Length: 396
Image 1 (tube, rainbow, N blue to C red):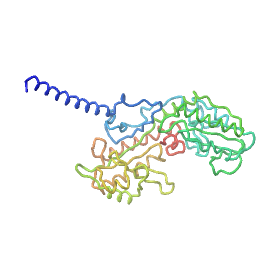
Image 2: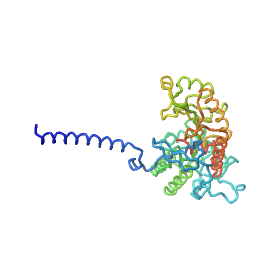
Image 3: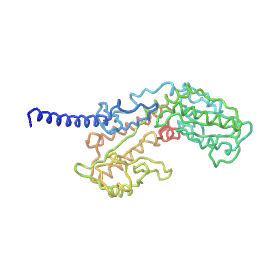
Image 4: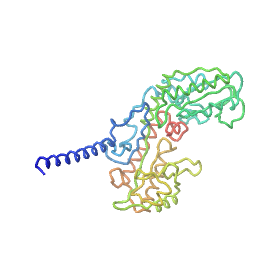
């Protein structure tokens, strides 16, 4: 074999190796969590802020594994909500909300989130014109829910509620397939924002079309809302909620190289009152109401299942408090802290912050202030934590 042939063979081998290495590098680079490589969606889901008990005041950096960035420092101190959503009424003590369908449907982006019945939110049994797009219908004659079946079963991508009442002197009643009676006034309500983002133009258009079809079949007087105005309200409300969406996590972690067997974790968690939920987390619910107070999730990205708990182990768990969805978040945090301490002691693990530093009483005081600040920021815009309004806006 000549020197030329040998050189060509070596060059060919090097070229092939170089191509393989380059392709592997490109593949790893494209799999990375870069914003430029992600497809652009017309409406992106709202990213929930989770506040880890880290005592540094430095701004948190995005995680490289796709999890939400953690925010530190007291919540609400630097919060500047969209003024067109939450500008306070001139006199909230004398403000009377007009509950006729036409008045509620004409609420504009300048309308504040006004408190109702002293709770900072309307009860679930009433339309909420401040977070929903409302379309009133005035039937020519009273109708039953059988005439509304197509609208009641419509799936638009955002929650839709229907209410009816006999006349203007009656209370609104939530309508479903089993509701009895006849109703002289009907109002359809589309939620404008939740954790999946703001209602899109397509969703609002579809909602209007569904209600318009219902109006023609009843028949009923029907005035569609201004789509551009409702879309602006949805986007503004979503921005507001994104600023206020906070979860608090307490990490219970085994020191390396230790781990917690899934069977032991499940036994200890269930003995403490947790039950494995369908979302892959253990849930601790209120004894009387059944409302979830806080959750216990895997420190690893894998959700818990009965099978995974039987076969695998984990290096830690995270106690999670969803501030907006929890009534009395500060008191609930105190309960969660005690539960986390007990679990850590039982499992021979440590309570640590996001930098794996042990948490002491001073750290818990700071975290408690964060919870209180997040709750007060919600109340400042008339979203009472744990209320029907909060559960709607902060649902997935």
